[in-house]
Length: 426
Image 1 (cartoon, one colour):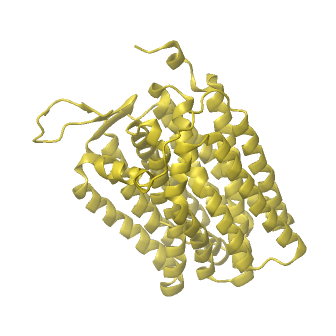
Image 2 (cartoon, rainbow, N blue to C red):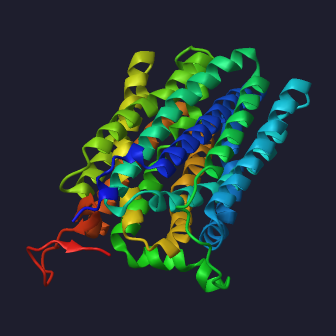
Image 3 (spheres, rainbow, N blue to C red):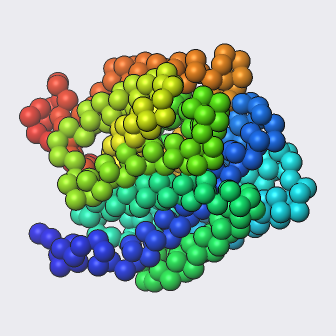
């Protein structure tokens, strides 16, 4: 029976509203950095491979620190961890701003400072994911995930557009604006009261650090969802090549790059807003497979397009299909994970998904340098379709995921002892 707290709308939960605002500010800052760094690096080097190095510079520290970050998120006050992350990212962005304004910036300086951002994000991403379930009742979690995703998409729409426009005044202006937003995020997190979990004093052991991996391996549906997203994002890293498409293929300037980056988020935002008010009903696992297949097809369409409008539409479809996959995955992971392990499990999730964005950018940069920009994007989309076909066969537990409202409900598989009845996970 629903409690009065569960009947309240999401916006009536003050802690969630503060978290939502802070999350949006942080993502806007990251997106502005991505536009400025991508354009500045390509302007300095005219090299697709160097765009790939930007992704690798963020991936390596995130990969190295991911498991430790999850353990930190489960042992310490998650608000304080997030505030320290914002401080680190603000300092790195300050370095980018000063280097650009004073004229000493080089591609190697950018790689180093972006690596510092990647290190801070290694702690930020799992900690934010682990904090969210503590801000709303469990019955509202799926809607909170969708609402949080819609805020993220707003930021991904606004961030590149703002960054592209501000770049007209120089990259230092973009980086300085990012600094202000990182500080705003830290203030918003500080204002959250009374809902963060008490930090645990569990001893730090090698086994406890790896508990997140062991947990995910035992949950086949979760493993399938995370790994499906991993390979789809890894193969579909066309975003790293958007500066080349904007400048050399579609013949636009920084404003065009901002629109292209924002287009992915427009599709994602529309789907996230819809799902925040109309949660997925039946067959969530099958919908995830279908969405990732559409994601692959839209990558192919974008790669082959020579018209700006068609490219924008393909990116909108890409973002919409990806958002369905994101919401199914995040809801499934959060609903099946105990709070005491959410940091470590979220860290593994971030390692698979968040860092795969940067690794996918590196892969796209390398293959574009080897085979050309268009073949790189098209082959990536075809690879995504192959992954969908293989994962559909290898992870029937994911295809059997049914409802994601309140509790994750797993439909009985043929041959199970409980045929005909739904199985609820803890």
